[in-house]
Image (cartoon, rainbow, N blue to C red):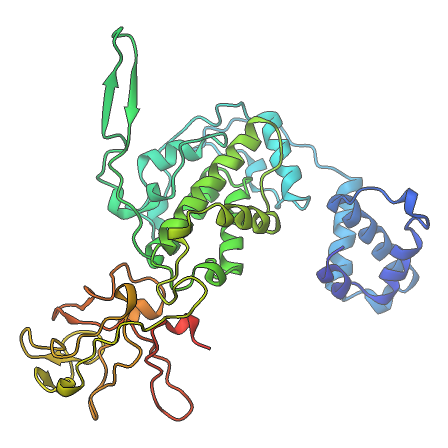
Length: 406
């Protein structure tokens, strides 16, 4: 039973519930959310009957009594027509289901065929700000919970005009053909990834509101801060996250085929650990570290005799960071590189001018290397250094992002 149940229940309700529980370990049944809810409801009703005045205004008691009443008096749903467009059956507007989401998933599997629902393409995505963000292929695949072809990049505006299949190869006998690759553009940054996840969840809400597998996946990503513990500062963070999401799509699709449960947010923690452990080592190297060491400066290429002397002009910059340089001489006299192309932690800022730091690097979403990162629209070099300002008012400037700052 969850902490929320315990906090929302009165002492009398909990005592009633406790009295109804088995006393020996070999009598304890497997946990079922709906059974627990019914037990809490029954205990709440009993407590309310014993002390009706004291619980009359208790919201939890009121809702538990409503649940008990519904269980004892199920509604008769009249037959009627429904075409998903003009004729909407009143049953579509009943209150939400309060059993476990896995039970909902299994019930849906009993009534929806293996190939899924009949796909339509006229959902009102524009009303929630997602017009032009969900490709036709995404809509098609979402209608089939067993799909093994669903991909997160189908939920980006950049792919609205892209073909989902690049080419077809005809076999020798001329009777069949196979699809090879696709033309969909990859998701390149964390903002696009987050937006695609929102588009996915909202589209699923339109198409299959009973399917909570996508919300569970999004919930895990939010709770883990998009795997910040494992991937913060990793230049391949977004591509790894996209691959994981697509991996979960396939796992849940297979579960639907085999009439098994989808992966909940809690279960996805173990799925992520297994997935992450099997990633190639070169993809798990953080841009702020080398193996187990946080940024080693074996190469000290900084030119101390020409520290930002030429090409520096103050004032408000045209790009992010407030930096405005002078032609191509900016920072050329200071070779700001460290081991494996990482920024040098000993790079000092100009005495009185702001340091042109890459903000996207500090958010863990920059796709550029330290050597070729520039500030738009000026094109001036942007430094991959930590922009955290310490308590003494000095910027850290370490060879790590602010996400890795300690």
